[in-house]
Length: 224
Image 1 (spheres, rainbow, N blue to C red):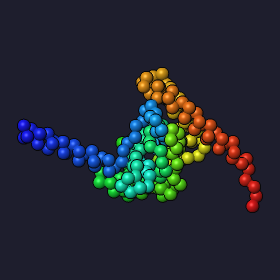
Image 2: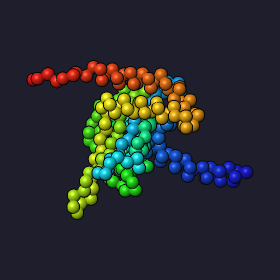
Image 3: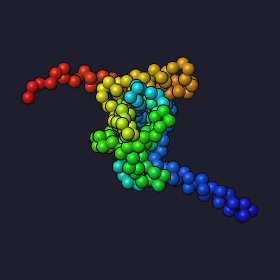
Image 4: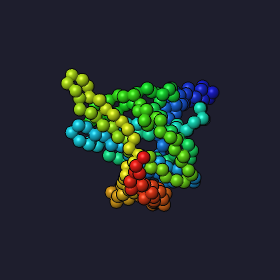
């Protein structure tokens, strides 16, 4: 009987090791799930652009992390071209960061897959240097749209891809409005639509906050 117990423990060890390594990369948060008590959410979209125009065939990922060393919250945010993602996360102060390896080390390059081709580039400094985001309990924050643009290739050279975060008022308003419309689509699963109803007040409040920013923008820039 003790042999059987030892055998079960030995089988469980590899699974525990795999789970531990996966946690080092960061947790992929639940998407479009109903809100739990005091849980928060972020909304982020993705846009992939080729020289021939925009495509919906593309993916990439970024990390979204708090400070705190080994106790930090580390989320991995996969995004797909043309889609908006409502991810549930714990409240806190977060920054964008490069993705991590299975051992928890930051990866120096960002990977973007577009129409079957893989592009690698240094993680954009403009994204890494953004101010931290304060995610309040039970609130939804629109981050904007991760945009990857493939530049026309020069003769004899591989094409270059540039990545930025479009966090303009227009982009953040779009991801909230599109999320509301997509989650309430009658062709979506019932549990997704029920989640949209549960999040409806948070989504509406987020949209109101964004529209208020737009209303407060100056209509002109005074001369120096």
